[in-house]
Image (cartoon, rainbow, N blue to C red):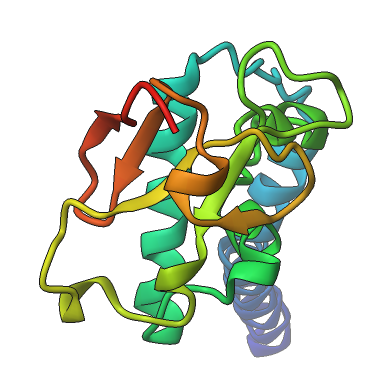
Length: 173
């Protein structure tokens, strides 16, 4: 009579161990399964519909993030390459991200913002004047345009200062 008891005890122990294994596997598999299901969900992409002020504020934030990472502002010749990496979001397609770098009214392959080349590679905290234009509406329409605001800035156009304030450029060159 002791043998049937031993068999039922073994079955019970095997059942408990099996349940523990299933619970353990379920516990550790829950995270990856949840992530996989989230990836299968359809993402709703939003469009960028901001004005020049919105673009300048977004660009300033991206350049400050770059500066925080690299301990300096980007080189003027590649400032848009540096900024675009920090403008991307998961809920916005690349074409919409590019709109943040385009002045309203610019053609599809034009941009219309320029970087003040006198700030290339500097750190904004080292500037005596936080009111100096960092990025501004420009007559130069190419990718990563740069130069002096007094030379290529749109007269009366907008700019964002190193300190993050949106200002208006002088009305005449």
